[in-house]
Image (cartoon, rainbow, N blue to C red; front, side):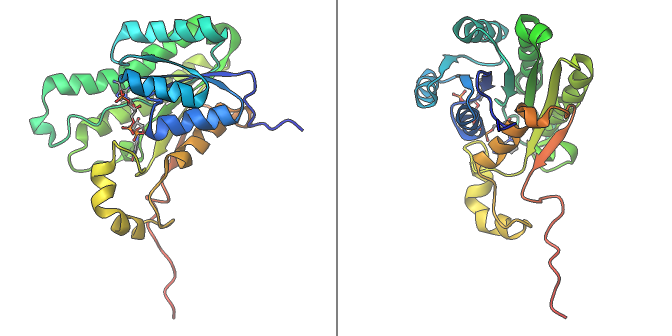
Length: 253
Ligand SMILES: NC(=O)c1ccc[n+]([C@@H]2O[C@H](COP(=O)([O-])OP(=O)(O)OC[C@H]3O[C@@H](n4cnc5c(N)ncnc54)[C@H](OP(=O)(O)O)[C@@H]3O)[C@@H](O)[C@H]2O)c1
C-alpha cells in the first residue's frame, strides 16, 4: 500500500532550509520522496544544504521581493512543478521592550516574518498552485498567542502569520491547503540564548521532559504537507512538548 505520507514526484520549496528547523524539514521531505529547493542568505550554507539534500538552492534574503520571484522561477524551471512551500525563515529581532523597538528593525521583522510568506505564496499560487493545487506550511511559534518579556515584536509578527495562515486557507481553498506549525523551544541557533543556559531547568518544567529537536517540528510539517492531511486546512499544529499544560503528575497519596 502506498503511504499517505509519501511525497514521490512532489517538489518543495523551503525558506531558511540550511540549518535548524528548516534543514530538518527539508531532510524529512526528501526522505518522503520529494525534491527540494532551499534558500537562505549565506551562499555557502545554501550550497552545502543543497548538496546534502541532493536538491537545489538559491542564496538570497526573503526580505527581497525579487529574490522570492526568482526562487519560484528557479524551482519551476528546474523541476517543472511546485507542490509544497514551507515558509520557515524568520527573525527574532528587535528583541527587548517594545518601547525601545527601532522602527526600521520592526519593519524588517514584518517584512521577513509576514510579508515574505505572503509574497512567496502569491508567486507559488500564480505560477503553479492556482491551476495544479498544492500546500503551504508556515512556521509560527507557540508564543504567538500569549505575551512574554522581550519578544513583543517577534510575537506580534507571528500572531499576524497565524492570521495570515487562516485567511489564506479560506481564500485558496479548495485547491491549496494552508496550515501552520507552532514550535515550542527547539534546539537551534535562533533559540540558543534561551536553551543553552537553562536547558535542564526548562526540560524539567515540561510535561515531556525535554526541549524540542528540529526533527520534532519536521515530522509535523511532513504530515501537514502530505496527503495524510488532505482534509486539514487553516489549522495551527502546536508542537511544544506540552508547554501549555505544564506537568501535572499525581503526587503519591
Ligand atoms: N528554535 C525555536 O525554539 C523556535 C521556536 C518557535 C518558532 N521557531 C521558528 O522556527 C523557524 C526556524 O527557526 P530556527 O530556530 O530553525 O532558526 P535558525 O536555526 O536560526 O535557522 C534560520 C534559517 O533561516 C535562514 N534565514 C534567516 N533569515 C533569513 C532571511 N532574511 N532570508 C532567508 N533566509 C533567512 C537562516 O540562514 P541565513 O542566516 O544564511 O539566512 C537559516 O537557514 C522560524 O520561523 C522561527 O521563528 C523557532
